[in-house]
Length: 240
Image (cartoon, rainbow, N blue to C red; front, side, top):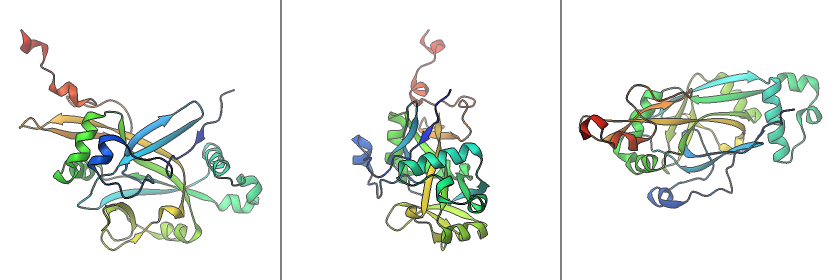
């Protein structure tokens, strides 16, 4: 019998370390959509250690999808509740309450703008360490249950954005890109997430840039590479 996967979003006690921490001031160690870090997995659980976050000069569109709990996602949420010391849904709610319960999945939808922002000078330090540590990935999707007040706002919103606030930290906004309602991380029970890897290319001047973000997995397309070091290698036919 295959063991159940326990989903744990590693957040509060994990500290950014090494050169990346020295190069970038991280306002909060709690992972948020758009964070950069290390994906960690074992046989029974997976986690994400936040190492840094980009600075966005413009808001990035985020897709939101409210969904009823399936057997698989309910199992993941129950495991999350168990981890934080809460009773499973079957004991905490009656059948009517469970039928009404839903979770939300957020995912970055404007990938083109995201790539453009990551390649800006304001993110040069972050991009440098993404080049040096190809194990770093982007937190590109997360599933959560929201408190009742926030849930009502999410159900009526048409737009959601990811942006950098006045303190330099990433924040999710409901509504207007510049005047929306900020979502507090404490209002979210994040019980699952997905990450995405980067693909690199060289521009006409030979400068390394992020070319794609593999939101759906797969391999880097065309002449782009997951490991930017491969772009610096001299082709064999030029060595002759």
